[in-house]
Image 1 (cartoon, rainbow, N blue to C red):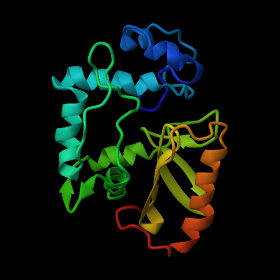
Image 2 (image 1 turned 180 degrees about the vertical axis):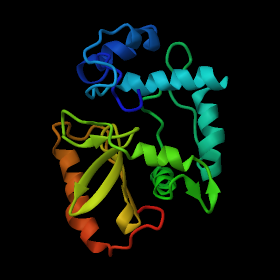
Image 3 (image 1 turned 135 degrees about the vertical axis):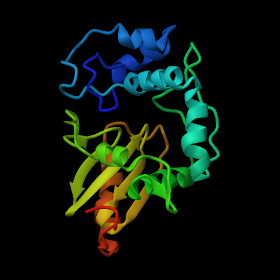
Length: 219
């Protein structure tokens, strides 16, 4: 699920509206036909991470919001607000968290430092490292995808990035010891031109201005 290789038909793109207006998002997602072999090619689907939210809720005995608040937000100093739930009360695992740019920067710094902040371990280092191992390749943009993170190479730099709806980005560039956050109007152009422009700004305007200083936590 976390690498978008469940094999289930996508609930994103043209299928998104029918999914979020259904009476049971989890059941709707799991009842969709298999279009790929499980663990096979990437099928990007918002339901994949929502199913993970339902799993977290059942496994921990607390809501995804409460689990995220205790395990991640509070240690990072993020004032996490409750967000949308599905009809059964499961917090939306796909989007709508409304993080501020400073919150996004804290998450990026956490992953740049392999799960630790100021020497305090918050996320297992092994999980961070595994998240940046390519598991599949997007059929849309050709970029690699790990556990919730995209990967590409630009101007000779390895870049890991989180990509939110409408052009919200957290870019991590380990050899520059750099985290870049970009936010956008969620109704920005959806033909790909807006996203390409943000990547161009990173590659042509920001990266050349930063001296190489490989982060000590990355080889």
